[in-house]
Length: 378
Image (cartoon, rainbow, N blue to C red; front, side, top):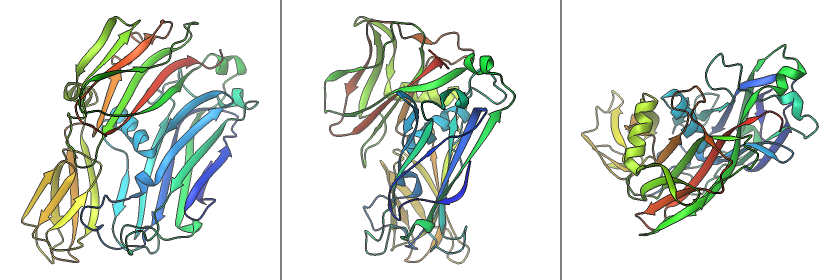
């Protein structure tokens, strides 16, 4: 659909284009890349602003229907749960040069199917031509905001993307109308509190045409470990019936087991200083650092929350940091399709559907995403 396209704006902006295809879309991959201006780790106590968190919103819509509405980070969380591992990321601190040296890159799956070969769920793009099926990408690439560190080069040609799609060919109009489509019906934000509970209102549908597949909840605060922002999450129907409930870490272990999780992210690093520090949005991370042969292996790696200290480095040391996690970081997915057969989805023809959150830490940033299975036309 798009190949090696420069963004429309040099640093910060929004690109929108129509998804013009005569076929149903089975899945898509959006690959975003950006050229580094800095060639070192970020200064101490500074979160690294990488190509992942530079993409703040991916939105696919047709008229009043919103099919996807999430950041690159949330998209990676959905894909990690579906596949058991994080999709391709190339996070390097090498100085920008000819691709791919000095370029960061992330591949963002945008799935419309339940599994490879699925011909029941897809995005029937031809049906939405009248409503203007379109994709928007909102981005902000930091430029020289830390004295030359932690930044990308300016210029639209230094921030590029590809969009590829797998399609289901040779479907008639009636077959397109018979497809199911995965649709996003909520994207809500919430600020956590020190104590107490709140009810987050989710979508209901009196027609019964749509059913909830899953809720994704992300909760993150800089420097804080897992399992303290929310103590517990519950799904409550009609104000009184609790149909799903567990502690935060209980949900996370369920998710890890359900997807056979093997989570690892790698960062090609160049140390900023002695005993270097790296911060990332992976709380309770289990790091491992391998220095390049010229300097030997760093003596020790410790972590507190999302802060990683690499003892034994000196300025300009090069190495590879491996970030491992036993759970999908900062995320819980309440899944109503564990068997993969669509037999236990949550009907939306309820008076109320609420997620009850029991708080544990003040001022954390939380998001709630609701994915439902819907008819192609209703």
